Length: 498
Image (tube, rainbow, N blue to C red; front, side, top):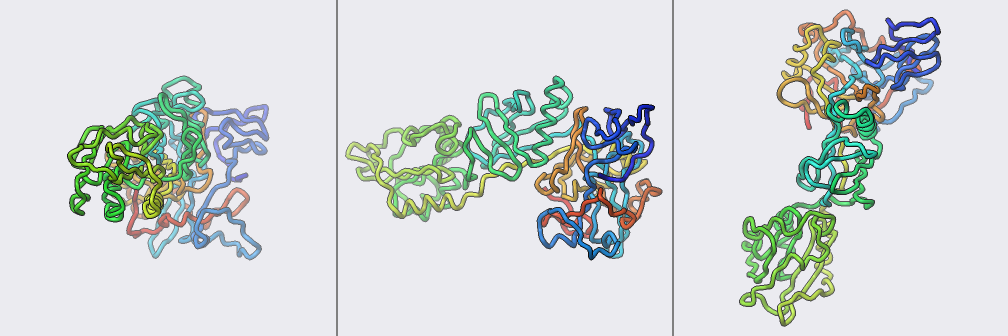
Protein backbone atom coordinates (compact mmCIF):
# COMPACT_ATOMS: atom_id res chain seq x y z
CA UNK A 1 0.00 0.00 0.00
CA UNK A 2 1.36 3.41 -0.92
CA UNK A 3 2.37 5.70 1.92
CA UNK A 4 1.80 8.82 -0.17
CA UNK A 5 -1.10 10.41 1.67
CA UNK A 6 -3.46 12.87 0.13
CA UNK A 7 -3.77 16.16 2.01
CA UNK A 8 -6.95 18.16 2.35
CA UNK A 9 -9.34 15.26 2.83
CA UNK A 10 -12.32 15.66 5.15
CA UNK A 11 -12.44 13.52 8.30
CA UNK A 12 -15.86 12.77 9.75
CA UNK A 13 -16.45 12.22 13.46
CA UNK A 14 -17.00 8.47 12.96
CA UNK A 15 -13.44 8.18 11.58
CA UNK A 16 -14.68 8.01 8.00
CA UNK A 17 -12.76 10.17 5.61
CA UNK A 18 -14.07 11.68 2.44
CA UNK A 19 -12.06 10.90 -0.68
CA UNK A 20 -11.65 13.74 -3.17
CA UNK A 21 -9.83 11.73 -5.84
CA UNK A 22 -12.85 11.67 -8.15
CA UNK A 23 -16.31 13.26 -8.40
CA UNK A 24 -17.98 10.40 -6.47
CA UNK A 25 -16.50 11.77 -3.20
CA UNK A 26 -16.90 8.55 -1.19
CA UNK A 27 -16.91 8.50 2.63
CA UNK A 28 -14.54 5.66 3.46
CA UNK A 29 -14.54 3.75 6.75
CA UNK A 30 -11.23 2.88 8.44
CA UNK A 31 -9.63 -0.12 6.78
CA UNK A 32 -11.97 0.07 3.80
CA UNK A 33 -11.53 1.21 0.21
CA UNK A 34 -13.73 3.49 -1.84
CA UNK A 35 -16.12 2.51 -4.64
CA UNK A 36 -13.26 2.54 -7.16
CA UNK A 37 -11.02 0.22 -5.08
CA UNK A 38 -8.16 2.63 -5.82
CA UNK A 39 -8.15 4.63 -2.58
CA UNK A 40 -8.52 3.45 1.01
CA UNK A 41 -8.70 4.72 4.57
CA UNK A 42 -5.46 3.58 6.22
CA UNK A 43 -5.29 4.63 9.86
CA UNK A 44 -7.18 7.79 9.04
CA UNK A 45 -5.14 8.69 5.99
CA UNK A 46 -6.37 8.47 2.41
CA UNK A 47 -3.89 6.34 0.50
CA UNK A 48 -3.56 5.08 -3.05
CA UNK A 49 -3.95 1.30 -2.88
CA UNK A 50 -2.04 0.16 -5.99
CA UNK A 51 1.75 0.46 -6.16
CA UNK A 52 3.20 3.39 -8.01
CA UNK A 53 5.05 2.13 -11.09
CA UNK A 54 8.42 3.45 -12.22
CA UNK A 55 10.29 2.16 -15.25
CA UNK A 56 13.92 1.25 -14.82
CA UNK A 57 15.86 1.10 -18.07
CA UNK A 58 18.59 -0.87 -16.36
CA UNK A 59 16.12 -3.73 -16.32
CA UNK A 60 15.20 -3.33 -19.96
CA UNK A 61 17.80 -5.71 -21.27
CA UNK A 62 15.44 -8.51 -20.36
CA UNK A 63 12.84 -7.04 -22.70
CA UNK A 64 9.32 -7.29 -21.45
CA UNK A 65 7.73 -5.58 -18.48
CA UNK A 66 8.19 -7.80 -15.44
CA UNK A 67 7.91 -7.18 -11.70
CA UNK A 68 11.24 -6.36 -10.13
CA UNK A 69 12.31 -7.21 -6.61
CA UNK A 70 15.51 -5.62 -5.40
CA UNK A 71 17.99 -7.82 -3.58
CA UNK A 72 20.22 -6.95 -0.66
CA UNK A 73 22.79 -5.23 -2.85
CA UNK A 74 20.77 -2.04 -3.08
CA UNK A 75 22.90 0.94 -1.96
CA UNK A 76 20.03 3.16 -0.86
CA UNK A 77 19.95 5.22 -4.06
CA UNK A 78 16.63 4.77 -5.84
CA UNK A 79 18.11 4.69 -9.32
CA UNK A 80 20.17 6.87 -11.56
CA UNK A 81 17.82 9.58 -12.90
CA UNK A 82 18.44 9.04 -16.63
CA UNK A 83 17.58 5.38 -16.17
CA UNK A 84 14.36 6.01 -14.26
CA UNK A 85 11.01 7.11 -15.64
CA UNK A 86 8.16 7.81 -13.24
CA UNK A 87 4.89 6.65 -14.77
CA UNK A 88 1.42 7.74 -13.76
CA UNK A 89 0.30 4.21 -12.91
CA UNK A 90 -0.63 4.30 -9.25
CA UNK A 91 0.40 7.95 -8.91
CA UNK A 92 -3.09 9.26 -8.19
CA UNK A 93 -5.30 11.88 -9.74
CA UNK A 94 -5.43 15.67 -9.76
CA UNK A 95 -9.14 15.94 -8.96
CA UNK A 96 -10.30 18.64 -8.20
CA UNK A 97 -8.49 19.97 -11.20
CA UNK A 98 -7.01 23.10 -9.66
CA UNK A 99 -4.37 20.97 -7.91
CA UNK A 100 -0.94 20.36 -9.49
CA UNK A 101 -0.36 16.84 -10.78
CA UNK A 102 0.58 14.32 -8.06
CA UNK A 103 4.17 14.00 -9.29
CA UNK A 104 6.21 16.58 -11.17
CA UNK A 105 9.72 15.16 -11.26
CA UNK A 106 12.93 16.43 -12.77
CA UNK A 107 16.01 14.62 -13.98
CA UNK A 108 19.10 15.40 -16.01
CA UNK A 109 19.42 13.45 -19.22
CA UNK A 110 22.54 13.86 -21.36
CA UNK A 111 23.14 17.27 -19.84
CA UNK A 112 19.56 18.41 -20.42
CA UNK A 113 17.26 19.20 -17.50
CA UNK A 114 13.99 17.39 -18.12
CA UNK A 115 10.71 17.28 -16.25
CA UNK A 116 7.90 14.72 -16.32
CA UNK A 117 4.42 15.62 -15.13
CA UNK A 118 2.55 12.54 -13.96
CA UNK A 119 -1.14 11.98 -13.25
CA UNK A 120 -3.84 9.36 -13.54
CA UNK A 121 -6.46 10.98 -15.73
CA UNK A 122 -10.19 10.37 -15.26
CA UNK A 123 -11.66 9.93 -18.73
CA UNK A 124 -15.42 10.04 -19.19
CA UNK A 125 -14.79 10.84 -22.84
CA UNK A 126 -12.88 7.79 -23.92
CA UNK A 127 -13.24 4.53 -25.75
CA UNK A 128 -11.33 1.76 -27.44
CA UNK A 129 -10.87 0.89 -31.07
CA UNK A 130 -10.66 -2.85 -31.65
CA UNK A 131 -8.99 -4.34 -34.72
CA UNK A 132 -9.94 -7.97 -35.25
CA UNK A 133 -7.88 -9.91 -37.78
CA UNK A 134 -10.40 -12.15 -39.53
CA UNK A 135 -12.13 -12.63 -42.85
CA UNK A 136 -15.16 -14.05 -41.13
CA UNK A 137 -18.22 -11.86 -41.12
CA UNK A 138 -18.74 -10.24 -37.72
CA UNK A 139 -21.74 -8.09 -38.57
CA UNK A 140 -23.00 -5.26 -40.78
CA UNK A 141 -21.43 -1.84 -40.43
CA UNK A 142 -23.18 0.37 -37.84
CA UNK A 143 -24.56 -2.70 -36.05
CA UNK A 144 -24.70 -2.45 -32.28
CA UNK A 145 -22.03 -4.30 -30.30
CA UNK A 146 -23.17 -5.60 -26.92
CA UNK A 147 -21.55 -6.86 -23.74
CA UNK A 148 -23.75 -8.66 -21.22
CA UNK A 149 -26.71 -7.58 -23.37
CA UNK A 150 -25.95 -3.87 -23.11
CA UNK A 151 -24.99 -1.68 -26.06
CA UNK A 152 -21.32 -0.75 -25.70
CA UNK A 153 -20.37 0.30 -29.23
CA UNK A 154 -20.81 -0.43 -32.92
CA UNK A 155 -19.20 -2.03 -35.95
CA UNK A 156 -17.32 0.45 -38.10
CA UNK A 157 -15.45 -0.47 -41.26
CA UNK A 158 -13.91 -3.61 -42.66
CA UNK A 159 -10.30 -2.95 -43.55
CA UNK A 160 -7.53 -5.01 -45.10
CA UNK A 161 -7.84 -8.39 -43.43
CA UNK A 162 -9.47 -6.95 -40.35
CA UNK A 163 -12.78 -5.75 -39.01
CA UNK A 164 -13.04 -2.74 -36.77
CA UNK A 165 -15.17 -2.07 -33.71
CA UNK A 166 -15.61 1.22 -31.91
CA UNK A 167 -16.50 0.73 -28.25
CA UNK A 168 -17.28 3.13 -25.46
CA UNK A 169 -17.41 6.85 -25.96
CA UNK A 170 -19.39 9.39 -24.04
CA UNK A 171 -22.82 8.33 -25.33
CA UNK A 172 -22.47 4.79 -24.00
CA UNK A 173 -20.64 5.76 -20.80
CA UNK A 174 -22.98 8.55 -19.74
CA UNK A 175 -25.71 9.00 -22.34
CA UNK A 176 -27.64 5.77 -21.84
CA UNK A 177 -29.01 3.94 -18.82
CA UNK A 178 -27.04 3.54 -15.61
CA UNK A 179 -26.53 -0.15 -16.39
CA UNK A 180 -25.32 0.62 -19.91
CA UNK A 181 -22.71 2.99 -18.54
CA UNK A 182 -21.55 0.51 -15.91
CA UNK A 183 -21.27 -2.40 -18.35
CA UNK A 184 -19.51 -0.23 -20.93
CA UNK A 185 -16.98 0.93 -18.35
CA UNK A 186 -16.40 -2.64 -17.20
CA UNK A 187 -15.89 -3.90 -20.78
CA UNK A 188 -13.44 -1.10 -21.57
CA UNK A 189 -11.52 -1.67 -18.35
CA UNK A 190 -11.15 -5.40 -19.00
CA UNK A 191 -10.10 -4.86 -22.61
CA UNK A 192 -7.52 -2.23 -21.65
CA UNK A 193 -6.11 -4.43 -18.90
CA UNK A 194 -5.68 -7.33 -21.32
CA UNK A 195 -8.59 -9.47 -20.17
CA UNK A 196 -10.94 -11.37 -22.55
CA UNK A 197 -14.36 -9.85 -23.22
CA UNK A 198 -17.22 -11.58 -25.05
CA UNK A 199 -19.05 -9.28 -27.46
CA UNK A 200 -22.17 -9.98 -29.48
CA UNK A 201 -23.04 -8.10 -32.64
CA UNK A 202 -26.65 -7.51 -33.68
CA UNK A 203 -27.27 -9.46 -36.89
CA UNK A 204 -23.81 -10.98 -36.72
CA UNK A 205 -21.43 -13.06 -34.67
CA UNK A 206 -20.22 -13.51 -31.13
CA UNK A 207 -16.55 -12.74 -30.72
CA UNK A 208 -14.21 -13.02 -27.77
CA UNK A 209 -11.64 -10.23 -27.85
CA UNK A 210 -8.43 -10.09 -25.82
CA UNK A 211 -5.61 -7.68 -26.62
CA UNK A 212 -2.71 -9.43 -28.30
CA UNK A 213 -4.57 -12.76 -28.57
CA UNK A 214 -6.37 -14.44 -31.50
CA UNK A 215 -10.06 -13.55 -31.74
CA UNK A 216 -12.58 -16.33 -31.15
CA UNK A 217 -15.47 -16.01 -33.60
CA UNK A 218 -18.58 -18.05 -32.85
CA UNK A 219 -16.49 -20.36 -30.66
CA UNK A 220 -13.74 -20.90 -33.26
CA UNK A 221 -10.29 -19.48 -32.61
CA UNK A 222 -9.05 -17.56 -35.63
CA UNK A 223 -5.56 -18.57 -36.73
CA UNK A 224 -4.63 -16.55 -39.78
CA UNK A 225 -5.00 -13.07 -41.14
CA UNK A 226 -5.52 -13.31 -44.90
CA UNK A 227 -2.45 -13.02 -47.10
CA UNK A 228 -4.17 -10.36 -49.23
CA UNK A 229 -7.33 -9.90 -51.26
CA UNK A 230 -8.05 -12.33 -54.08
CA UNK A 231 -6.36 -10.09 -56.63
CA UNK A 232 -3.26 -9.60 -54.47
CA UNK A 233 -3.02 -13.35 -53.90
CA UNK A 234 -3.06 -13.92 -57.66
CA UNK A 235 -0.22 -11.43 -58.00
CA UNK A 236 1.85 -13.07 -55.26
CA UNK A 237 1.58 -16.68 -56.39
CA UNK A 238 0.69 -16.63 -60.12
CA UNK A 239 4.16 -17.58 -61.25
CA UNK A 240 4.31 -20.51 -58.82
CA UNK A 241 0.98 -21.90 -60.06
CA UNK A 242 2.07 -21.66 -63.69
CA UNK A 243 2.10 -25.04 -65.39
CA UNK A 244 0.42 -26.86 -62.51
CA UNK A 245 -3.12 -25.76 -63.38
CA UNK A 246 -4.94 -24.01 -66.22
CA UNK A 247 -6.86 -21.54 -64.08
CA UNK A 248 -7.02 -20.37 -60.46
CA UNK A 249 -9.85 -18.71 -58.56
CA UNK A 250 -8.99 -17.04 -55.26
CA UNK A 251 -12.28 -16.75 -53.40
CA UNK A 252 -12.62 -13.60 -51.31
CA UNK A 253 -15.53 -11.56 -49.98
CA UNK A 254 -13.89 -8.35 -51.14
CA UNK A 255 -12.13 -9.07 -54.44
CA UNK A 256 -12.22 -12.53 -55.95
CA UNK A 257 -9.33 -13.07 -58.37
CA UNK A 258 -9.22 -15.17 -61.57
CA UNK A 259 -5.77 -16.00 -62.91
CA UNK A 260 -6.58 -16.33 -66.64
CA UNK A 261 -8.23 -12.89 -66.72
CA UNK A 262 -5.93 -11.12 -64.27
CA UNK A 263 -3.11 -8.90 -65.47
CA UNK A 264 -0.61 -11.27 -63.84
CA UNK A 265 -1.98 -14.15 -65.91
CA UNK A 266 -1.84 -12.08 -69.09
CA UNK A 267 1.79 -11.14 -68.50
CA UNK A 268 2.65 -14.80 -67.86
CA UNK A 269 0.83 -15.93 -71.02
CA UNK A 270 -1.97 -17.89 -69.34
CA UNK A 271 -4.59 -18.60 -72.07
CA UNK A 272 -8.30 -17.89 -71.69
CA UNK A 273 -10.28 -20.76 -70.18
CA UNK A 274 -13.86 -19.66 -70.81
CA UNK A 275 -14.54 -19.40 -67.07
CA UNK A 276 -17.57 -17.39 -65.92
CA UNK A 277 -17.71 -15.84 -62.46
CA UNK A 278 -20.93 -14.68 -60.84
CA UNK A 279 -20.48 -11.25 -59.36
CA UNK A 280 -19.73 -7.69 -60.38
CA UNK A 281 -16.63 -7.41 -62.54
CA UNK A 282 -14.41 -4.55 -61.48
CA UNK A 283 -11.40 -4.89 -63.75
CA UNK A 284 -10.11 -7.94 -65.67
CA UNK A 285 -9.69 -10.83 -63.26
CA UNK A 286 -11.14 -8.92 -60.29
CA UNK A 287 -14.75 -9.47 -59.11
CA UNK A 288 -16.79 -7.87 -56.32
CA UNK A 289 -19.84 -9.37 -54.59
CA UNK A 290 -19.43 -13.00 -55.66
CA UNK A 291 -21.43 -14.02 -52.57
CA UNK A 292 -22.81 -12.65 -49.34
CA UNK A 293 -20.46 -12.09 -46.38
CA UNK A 294 -20.19 -15.02 -43.99
CA UNK A 295 -17.89 -17.43 -42.21
CA UNK A 296 -17.20 -19.72 -45.19
CA UNK A 297 -14.66 -19.56 -48.02
CA UNK A 298 -12.76 -16.25 -48.03
CA UNK A 299 -15.17 -14.54 -45.65
CA UNK A 300 -18.20 -15.37 -47.83
CA UNK A 301 -21.24 -17.44 -46.97
CA UNK A 302 -20.38 -20.23 -49.39
CA UNK A 303 -19.17 -23.73 -48.60
CA UNK A 304 -19.05 -24.88 -52.24
CA UNK A 305 -16.74 -22.79 -54.45
CA UNK A 306 -18.51 -24.00 -57.59
CA UNK A 307 -21.53 -21.96 -56.53
CA UNK A 308 -19.83 -18.78 -57.76
CA UNK A 309 -19.25 -20.23 -61.27
CA UNK A 310 -21.47 -19.93 -64.31
CA UNK A 311 -21.24 -22.40 -67.25
CA UNK A 312 -17.92 -22.44 -69.09
CA UNK A 313 -17.79 -20.95 -72.59
CA UNK A 314 -17.87 -24.02 -74.84
CA UNK A 315 -16.00 -22.21 -77.58
CA UNK A 316 -13.00 -21.73 -75.28
CA UNK A 317 -12.99 -24.35 -72.49
CA UNK A 318 -11.90 -27.95 -73.04
CA UNK A 319 -12.34 -31.33 -71.32
CA UNK A 320 -9.56 -31.99 -68.80
CA UNK A 321 -9.12 -28.29 -67.98
CA UNK A 322 -7.45 -28.10 -64.54
CA UNK A 323 -9.09 -25.70 -62.11
CA UNK A 324 -7.82 -24.72 -58.67
CA UNK A 325 -9.76 -22.85 -55.97
CA UNK A 326 -8.20 -21.38 -52.84
CA UNK A 327 -9.29 -18.88 -50.17
CA UNK A 328 -7.22 -15.90 -49.06
CA UNK A 329 -6.03 -17.62 -45.88
CA UNK A 330 -5.38 -20.97 -47.56
CA UNK A 331 -7.83 -22.49 -45.10
CA UNK A 332 -9.93 -23.74 -47.99
CA UNK A 333 -8.57 -25.23 -51.23
CA UNK A 334 -9.92 -27.62 -53.87
CA UNK A 335 -8.87 -29.04 -57.25
CA UNK A 336 -11.19 -29.86 -60.20
CA UNK A 337 -10.97 -31.03 -63.80
CA UNK A 338 -13.64 -30.48 -66.47
CA UNK A 339 -15.37 -33.60 -67.83
CA UNK A 340 -16.65 -34.14 -71.34
CA UNK A 341 -19.67 -31.92 -70.63
CA UNK A 342 -17.33 -29.16 -69.35
CA UNK A 343 -18.62 -29.67 -65.81
CA UNK A 344 -16.03 -29.47 -62.97
CA UNK A 345 -15.33 -32.76 -61.20
CA UNK A 346 -13.37 -32.68 -57.95
CA UNK A 347 -10.12 -34.65 -58.00
CA UNK A 348 -7.39 -35.38 -55.52
CA UNK A 349 -5.14 -32.37 -55.32
CA UNK A 350 -1.67 -32.92 -56.82
CA UNK A 351 1.09 -32.86 -54.22
CA UNK A 352 2.83 -29.82 -55.71
CA UNK A 353 -0.41 -27.87 -55.61
CA UNK A 354 -1.08 -28.95 -52.03
CA UNK A 355 2.38 -27.65 -51.12
CA UNK A 356 1.49 -24.28 -52.61
CA UNK A 357 -1.73 -24.24 -50.58
CA UNK A 358 0.44 -24.62 -47.51
CA UNK A 359 2.65 -21.79 -48.75
CA UNK A 360 -0.32 -19.44 -48.84
CA UNK A 361 -1.06 -20.42 -45.24
CA UNK A 362 2.56 -19.89 -44.26
CA UNK A 363 2.51 -16.38 -45.70
CA UNK A 364 -0.43 -15.32 -43.55
CA UNK A 365 0.20 -13.24 -40.43
CA UNK A 366 -1.13 -14.64 -37.13
CA UNK A 367 -4.63 -13.36 -36.44
CA UNK A 368 -4.74 -11.08 -33.41
CA UNK A 369 -7.07 -8.75 -31.58
CA UNK A 370 -5.64 -5.25 -31.13
CA UNK A 371 -7.05 -2.89 -28.52
CA UNK A 372 -6.26 0.81 -28.81
CA UNK A 373 -7.28 3.09 -25.95
CA UNK A 374 -8.40 6.50 -27.19
CA UNK A 375 -9.09 9.58 -25.08
CA UNK A 376 -8.95 13.34 -25.05
CA UNK A 377 -6.54 14.95 -22.61
CA UNK A 378 -7.37 18.45 -23.68
CA UNK A 379 -9.71 19.24 -20.82
CA UNK A 380 -9.13 20.33 -17.26
CA UNK A 381 -6.47 17.66 -16.74
CA UNK A 382 -4.10 20.19 -18.29
CA UNK A 383 -4.52 22.44 -15.25
CA UNK A 384 -2.55 19.91 -13.27
CA UNK A 385 0.35 20.57 -15.62
CA UNK A 386 0.27 24.32 -16.11
CA UNK A 387 -1.61 27.42 -15.02
CA UNK A 388 -2.04 28.25 -18.69
CA UNK A 389 -3.59 25.01 -20.04
CA UNK A 390 -3.80 25.89 -23.73
CA UNK A 391 -0.05 26.29 -23.85
CA UNK A 392 0.35 22.61 -22.99
CA UNK A 393 -1.77 21.77 -26.03
CA UNK A 394 0.41 24.00 -28.18
CA UNK A 395 3.56 22.46 -26.71
CA UNK A 396 2.34 18.95 -27.56
CA UNK A 397 1.44 19.97 -31.11
CA UNK A 398 4.86 21.63 -31.49
CA UNK A 399 6.49 18.35 -30.38
CA UNK A 400 8.14 20.07 -27.41
CA UNK A 401 6.16 17.92 -24.98
CA UNK A 402 6.28 14.15 -25.34
CA UNK A 403 3.11 12.36 -24.25
CA UNK A 404 3.15 8.81 -22.95
CA UNK A 405 0.73 6.47 -21.23
CA UNK A 406 2.50 4.32 -18.66
CA UNK A 407 5.70 5.05 -20.56
CA UNK A 408 4.25 3.82 -23.85
CA UNK A 409 4.31 6.13 -26.89
CA UNK A 410 0.97 7.49 -28.07
CA UNK A 411 -0.36 8.72 -31.38
CA UNK A 412 -1.66 12.28 -31.05
CA UNK A 413 -4.44 13.19 -33.45
CA UNK A 414 -4.20 16.35 -35.53
CA UNK A 415 -6.69 19.11 -34.80
CA UNK A 416 -7.85 20.61 -31.54
CA UNK A 417 -7.10 19.34 -28.05
CA UNK A 418 -4.81 16.48 -27.09
CA UNK A 419 -6.65 13.46 -28.47
CA UNK A 420 -4.46 10.42 -28.19
CA UNK A 421 -4.47 6.71 -28.94
CA UNK A 422 -2.24 4.02 -27.44
CA UNK A 423 -1.77 0.29 -27.92
CA UNK A 424 -2.61 -1.19 -24.51
CA UNK A 425 -0.17 -4.08 -25.03
CA UNK A 426 2.71 -1.57 -24.94
CA UNK A 427 1.76 -0.54 -21.40
CA UNK A 428 2.57 -2.26 -18.09
CA UNK A 429 0.01 -4.76 -16.83
CA UNK A 430 -3.14 -3.50 -15.13
CA UNK A 431 -2.35 0.11 -15.98
CA UNK A 432 -6.03 1.10 -16.04
CA UNK A 433 -8.55 1.70 -13.30
CA UNK A 434 -12.03 3.14 -13.08
CA UNK A 435 -14.29 5.38 -11.09
CA UNK A 436 -18.01 4.68 -10.83
CA UNK A 437 -19.12 7.97 -12.39
CA UNK A 438 -18.53 5.87 -14.69
CA UNK A 439 -15.18 6.66 -16.27
CA UNK A 440 -11.88 5.00 -16.99
CA UNK A 441 -8.71 5.99 -15.18
CA UNK A 442 -5.63 5.93 -17.37
CA UNK A 443 -2.03 6.99 -16.77
CA UNK A 444 -0.68 9.93 -18.71
CA UNK A 445 2.72 11.58 -18.56
CA UNK A 446 4.00 14.78 -20.14
CA UNK A 447 7.78 15.00 -20.57
CA UNK A 448 9.61 18.12 -21.72
CA UNK A 449 12.66 20.25 -21.07
CA UNK A 450 12.52 22.02 -17.72
CA UNK A 451 13.09 25.38 -19.44
CA UNK A 452 10.11 24.75 -21.75
CA UNK A 453 8.02 23.75 -18.74
CA UNK A 454 8.78 27.02 -17.00
CA UNK A 455 7.98 28.95 -20.15
CA UNK A 456 4.53 27.39 -20.56
CA UNK A 457 3.58 28.31 -16.99
CA UNK A 458 4.26 25.03 -15.24
CA UNK A 459 3.92 24.48 -11.52
CA UNK A 460 7.61 25.12 -10.86
CA UNK A 461 7.21 25.13 -7.08
CA UNK A 462 6.07 21.49 -7.27
CA UNK A 463 9.07 20.23 -9.23
CA UNK A 464 11.18 17.76 -7.29
CA UNK A 465 14.10 15.57 -8.33
CA UNK A 466 13.32 11.97 -9.13
CA UNK A 467 15.86 10.90 -6.51
CA UNK A 468 13.62 12.42 -3.83
CA UNK A 469 10.96 9.78 -4.38
CA UNK A 470 11.30 7.37 -1.49
CA UNK A 471 11.62 3.70 -2.15
CA UNK A 472 8.95 1.95 -0.11
CA UNK A 473 6.37 -0.75 -0.28
CA UNK A 474 4.16 1.45 -2.43
CA UNK A 475 6.70 1.76 -5.23
CA UNK A 476 7.18 -0.94 -7.83
CA UNK A 477 9.99 -0.92 -10.36
CA UNK A 478 9.54 -2.66 -13.69
CA UNK A 479 11.48 -2.80 -16.93
CA UNK A 480 10.13 -0.85 -19.90
CA UNK A 481 8.58 -2.60 -22.90
CA UNK A 482 11.40 -3.59 -25.22
CA UNK A 483 9.75 -2.03 -28.29
CA UNK A 484 9.06 1.35 -26.70
CA UNK A 485 11.40 4.31 -27.17
CA UNK A 486 12.84 5.52 -23.88
CA UNK A 487 10.55 8.43 -22.90
CA UNK A 488 13.36 10.47 -21.37
CA UNK A 489 15.46 10.53 -24.54
CA UNK A 490 15.23 14.23 -25.49
CA UNK A 491 16.53 13.78 -29.00
CA UNK A 492 14.95 10.48 -29.95
CA UNK A 493 14.58 10.26 -33.70
CA UNK A 494 11.07 8.89 -33.53
CA UNK A 495 8.99 10.52 -30.85
CA UNK A 496 5.50 9.69 -32.09
CA UNK A 497 4.18 6.79 -34.02
CA UNK A 498 0.92 5.03 -34.47
